[in-house]
Image 1 (cartoon, rainbow, N blue to C red):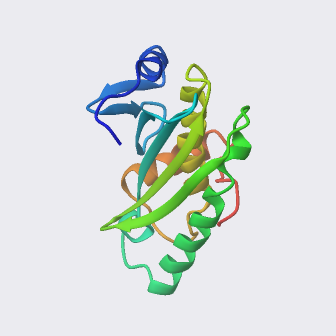
Image 2: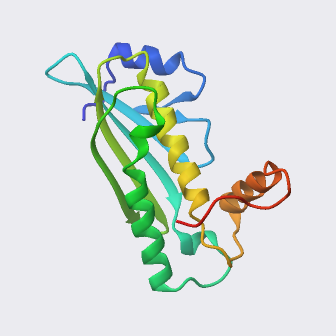
Length: 171
């Protein structure tokens, strides 16, 4: 990747209310997890985009210990579910790559895709980032006491559930 974002991508992300300029790219402002998107020119008319979303590993989001088998199962399932991210967009976008990697106490999701419409690319990146957050929340393993941003997200989900219970199923 180069340091300079193509002008048409820069203009589109600067004009979108879900992003703020952040160094060599743009920070997603609609999620609690740290999301950052960059773009660069390709040989064709489309631009290449990279969205990186950092989430806590399960063991770093709970108060107490999480068994290795539980964390490994959670991670594997989270990784498989992220491949479905294009289904949440209203655009015809295929992922060139989607990865989930462990980086210390974080799970780092990376989406790489090419997209020809720079004006719609921010909506695609936003949908992917919000999908990561929603998929994470749906996949928390019951029976643990969550803390930090995950506890906040679970509390918000419970308060919006109507009956005060957390909906969804674990991954």
